[in-house]
Amino acid sequence: MCELLALSANVPTDICFSFTGLSQRAGVTGPHKDGWGIAFYEGGACREFKDVRPACDSVIADLVKNYPIKSTTIISHIRQANVGDVCLKNTHPFRREMFGKAWCYAHNGQLKEGAENSLFTQQEEVFYQPIGDTDSEAAFCWLLNQMRKEPELMKSPYAFCEWLQQRCHILAEQGVFNMLLSDGDTLYTYCSTKLSWITRSAPFAEAKLNDVDLSIDFSNETQETDVVTMIATQPLTDNEDWNIVESGTLTVFQDGECIVAQAKRD
Amino acid sequence: MCELLALSANVPTDICFSFTGLSQRAGVTGPHKDGWGIAFYEGGACREFKDVRPACDSVIADLVKNYPIKSTTIISHIRQANVGDVCLKNTHPFRREMFGKAWCYAHNGQLKEGAENSLFTQQEEVFYQPIGDTDSEAAFCWLLNQMRKEPELMKSPYAFCEWLQQRCHILAEQGVFNMLLSDGDTLYTYCSTKLSWITRSAPFAEAKLNDVDLSIDFSNETQETDVVTMIATQPLTDNEDWNIVESGTLTVFQDGECIVAQAKRD
Image 1 (cartoon, one colour):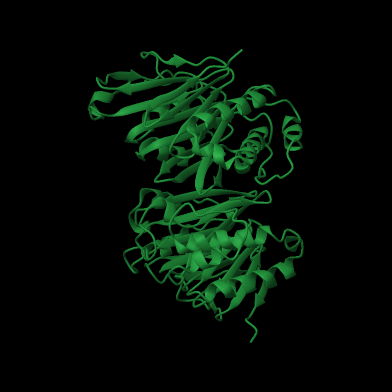
Image 2 (tube, chains in turn orange, cyan; image 1 turned 90 degrees about the vertical axis):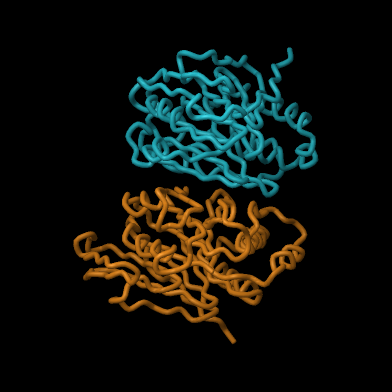
């Protein structure tokens, strides 16, 4: 399994504090030491860092922890390998261009063996293909191949959310499927078994990490109008109230605000 | 204009020395200070670093200069903007997945204004689309869209080289088109106006950078069987004999060796 971390904000914001907490789970407070990756959106493009070394012991991760790269949409992942070797091509987040936009994706969970093959045979034309060997990347390619067939859908945000949730249900039926997905403007998340989020806005207060003895007083770091949401498989701080998402829910963020929280219908 | 740098080797090799020289051209010995990027292939996937800051004054570039990331295929670019703002989405190398492989590309030169539009209208189906505003990325997408229509061609390496050179000629007719392109296995280069390369193998000797007072004795850094080729728009060292490529030539490298050097036919 793995851990997911994402940020959505209305002003470019760095993720040094939260990523420092997450990276402890890569060998210190958790077993997720099979590589990590992070994508920072910047004006529609992605700045990406990846490594197969554990995030708690990686020169590149040290840069991400200490050099404040600011972005309004960030997706990150630390990996505990189940399907696929520990190597760069199996390291999330995965990325593809569709309709002139950079789509980024990370997955926590595991699909049934062979699930990706059965998904792939359900479609006539396969455009996006995995580069690596993971069920996660195969599921991402399947999603994008499905989206590509419905260009009109992308113009109607709420119809798209409905559609995306249905596709995520299909994937969740194949195993565990907690997901982060973004085109840079909007951050889509799906909870199959575990996902939490918290929105921070004025008045800002202190936050204290779970995984390492580190606190930050956000009132010193922010402007009054800032709105910043953090999403993670498990809460990263122990003195704040995180929203725990119900299974089957699609939660969508834009500019730091939760704009859709669509529970599964029976 | 810009500067290109690439490496092809038969063993994973770092590029710290050459990238240190190249990055001097980003403000110190050259005007190419509008961002930079580098892609290291590793087992079919790409590890990418990009920044809009000048390579001679970038925390991320300092990491690339000092932390030896080893790869058998590396593509790098420092930018002096002509078409498109200085921003991440306009920063080379560009990357797309095609047929399950990661394709990377960087371009030196400039195409005639509107050239990309006239290219794009020549085809029925546009699959790959630019995310940014550069003529360079538009030309990359055009190339890939053309390649995608010819999946059989990819199975015949020499026919593919012939085909690729013809497409590069078409782009070079639209302006200046010096190019680096790779799928991770093979490094394709095209020279429209300037491109040089050098292959280093045993007995290894000292190399001295042009752009900064720095030398390296490769005999201390290498094994006897290592074969390493560096490709650059302009030679990076002043004590070695670089091959200066003729205009219109497609030069192809694999495992550090030049496997195709196909001049333009009259």
